Picture 1: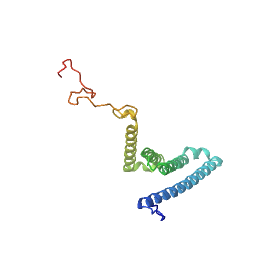
Picture 2: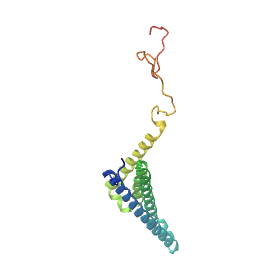
Picture 3: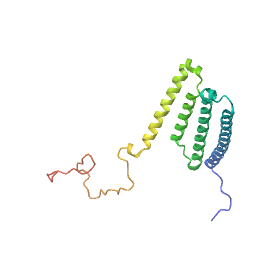
Picture 4: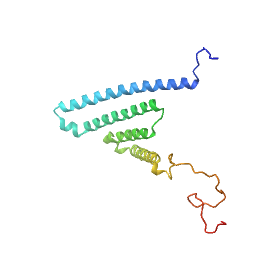
Length: 185
């Protein structure tokens, strides 16, 4: 007998729906931030081209600020890609997260002021962060490559039949039955 009352949402369905709404909100906010950053970068570059002291701007701190702004936009785009990927597949792509973090560390190194030479802890910390992130990225890429795994299973191979085979017979290194010239073995 079919029931006419509406089905209740389970707790996990509420959590999933809320999670999706938060991800959509984050996507919109990130898109607005990216658009604002692109406008700001465009205005800054346009003003730098119009001003008369172009050489001083493009060779000094101005260039570093522009590179910092450019990398900030790139980081925001990577975050947006990660959010939209999560919305589509419900999977956090660790590879993309590591690349984003590595880009953020690289940006920090690029925009470091000249006065940071007397802060060895900061420089060591950024160096160790870059090495750790690069190592983690390498490990993730290595684990994802099929040839890196020993004897990857193939879905195309047929299952071997073990019926009628004597399981107590000795086997060689490949798991095949060892053959012996003496039929008693």
